[in-house]
Length: 378
Image 1 (cartoon, one colour):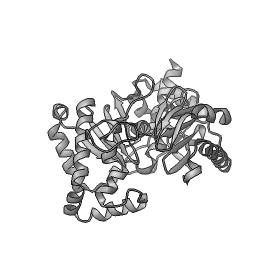
Image 2 (cartoon, helix red, strand yellow):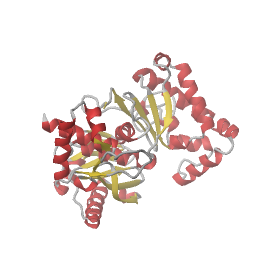
Image 3 (cartoon, one colour):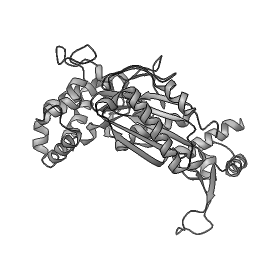
Image 4 (cartoon, one colour):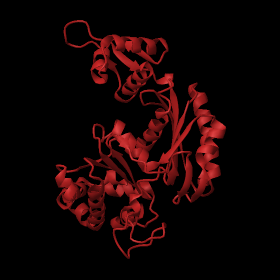
């Protein structure tokens, strides 16, 4: 019981940040003497510290704040994207202690090259910071077996049957947790972003590919073998464009990066920076934005209606390129989803919002799945 209480208290501090002993007692339903014992033990082990808060205007002696110590447990987070890799060392409490990133081109996108570069960059970053990660989380844009980190297919990376978890753990000698990028995005938004406080939420990521992560009753929905969330391959336009998955008319072919380029009148190979610039410029003219993106918005709406009717979330969080869509486009989409979705009306109107974590969402999600196996042992 003491071990359970200790882990629960540490997890609360890790996710929610500094708290007083009284706040911890209320949140955990424990008496103050139990909280004192737990905090004293963690402080003695160097996992937390107690500090007087900044002086306020209130009378009386302020309560001490209990703060997690970032260096008490550090994990490696890796976000593999189609054109970019980012790594970070993240401390207890979610603080990013240091990071590195690099672009992928041609040969550098092969599994061997990426794995080697991740291992070498992680070693350099850890040496520079003087820390050693105790676990690692990896975000991959593909179909991943969560049990062992086996990547069955990451088509936009052109990876097939890559034993990513095994290969990383054999060198790094720490637990490796590998997950689908959209699933980890959902985890991050649920714990630290726009979906915080929502027990049922869906994260929809539109990049080169389209994916989804699902939070159901406060937990990540992973499916029987860890495969869930390939909503980008939901067919919404029978007879539409061919998709790499072998089908045609997939949602990904209508709202992915290439589709957004077509809607904007840009070549499909347009660099990401140019796409973002065009969207920001378009936001200055709401009427033009609504007109040029009308068809794109209709396909996005149709897919979101299906997602909401199927999963019944309280909240849908839009990530990656969808976060840059002009408000003049997003607001009508949200209204249409509520109007067309029977489930949305039944639950009082599903809210549709943009990601609160920006480009770090999957990096933070990778860190959080690593911390899942760490907090019990700190």
